Length: 286
Image (cartoon, rainbow, N blue to C red):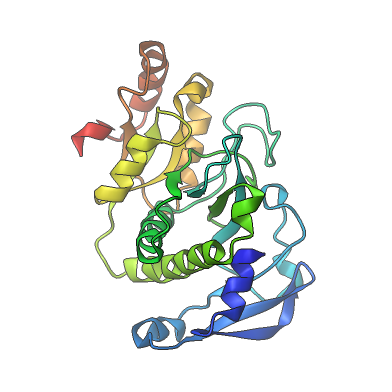
C-alpha cells in the first residue's frame, strides 16, 4: 500500500481512474508523466495500469480478467518482503516451486511464466533509484525463483520492499520502489527496439544468487529462472522444460554458478542439461 500510495500521490504522475474494476477495486491508468516527453510517447501505444487485490500475492491463482476490461501482457507485483534477519533491502525475482512443497503459494513443482528482460530492467532500476535517492543502507538482491503464484497465464515478476514492518512504512522507501517499477515498465518497452541481451537460465548458488546478480547487473545478460544449489537434486527434464517454455524470450543458454554447485549436483544436473540443444556456460565465462 505504501508503494501504491506513492504512485497515486506523485505530483509528476497523472493517473486516471477507469470505469472497470479488478478484484472489486478501481483500476488506474497512467496517462501522463510531467517533464518526461520521451516517456509520454510510449504511453500513446502502451497502457500502464495500477490494480489492487485483497488476495495475498503469493496465493493469487486467478487474475479474474473476465470480470474486467483489461488484458495485460506482463505483471509486476509490488510486494513486501520479510526475512528473519530483517535486513533493509530491495529485491526482485521470478516465482515457482522446485519441490513437492508449496507452503507459500502456487502448485508443487510448477514455475510461473516470466520475462528475463523485465527482471533485468527491475534490478537495474532498483540500483539506479538507490543511487539517486542515496539509500545505500538498503541492500539490493535478486532472489532465486521461489513461492507462488505459479498458475497465472501472464509473465510476472515480484519487486519487493524488505524486510520488516519498519521499512514497509517508510514513505521515501515506498517512493523508491514505485519509481523503480515505473522506469522498469518504460525500459522494458524501450528494450523491444534494441538488440536483446543473452537470455539465460541459472543453476547453483544460494538464495540471494550473488554471482547471478553480478552477471545481470554488469553484463548484457538476463536470466528468467534461477534454481539454487539446494534444489538441483529435484531437477528433472520436466522442470527444465518448464524453465524454457515459461520464459517469454527465447533462451540462449544454461548458466551455472560453477563454484556454487558441488560435484554431486553437477553429476545430476549436467546430463539433464545436455539433453537440450543449448550451450552450457559458467558465470565466469561472461
